[in-house]
Amino acid sequence: MTYISPALVLGAIVVLAALPSPAPARDYGRQGEVWSVAETDLLAQIHGKLVQLEKTGETARLNAQLKRRTIARVNRPIPVAGLTRAEAPRKWSFDPTITVSENVADDKGRLILAAGTRVNPLDTVPLRHPLVFIDGDDPEQLAWATARNKPAAAKIILVKGAPLELMKERQHRFYFDQGGKLVSRFGIRAVPAVIEQQGRVLTVSEIPFPRAKGKSL
Image (cartoon, rainbow, N blue to C red; front, side, top):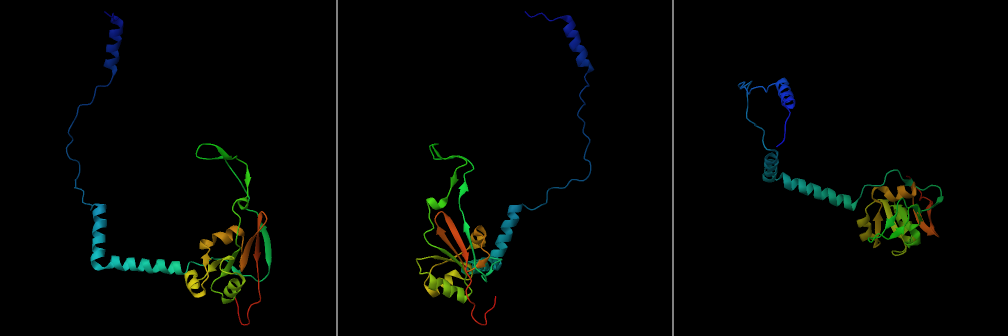
């Protein structure tokens, strides 16, 4: 049997006596006015709005409008801003070499590339065809690009114009530099411009040619 000292028991009683007594529960009654929640459920509100739009034909109108805008954007993408027609020749080299920032391993953890390794993508994926950038709304640039490059000899990339319409008209595949990501990457400021591979670097050229009489920018 465990012996408990009388002094210990006395000390516990003193501590308990010193603690504040719990406040008794008390009903204070209703304080102020009380209303029930009157807000409409958000999902129910959205559903009701959609049903109303469907009944009035607004949904069909909005869908048709979205379809027209999407088709228009596909047929004629937003032109790349900030480009001009080449008035003077400009040529430079672009080295695509990158430095690997961290180790690259395969699915089994085997090291493929160590951090700090310099890699040139052209060593494994060469640029097989020149990239030709033109303004597709400029008849002179179109004529120059299609006469200079057979359908399989180069990739003609528009910075402005209607690629699908031109494909049907000229029986030649055209691409579009969406958002100007390519011209920005290579520092192109004027078109026509051509990118070609020269060894382990890319050569970028802005190529002016005589403007037809009466033509202006």
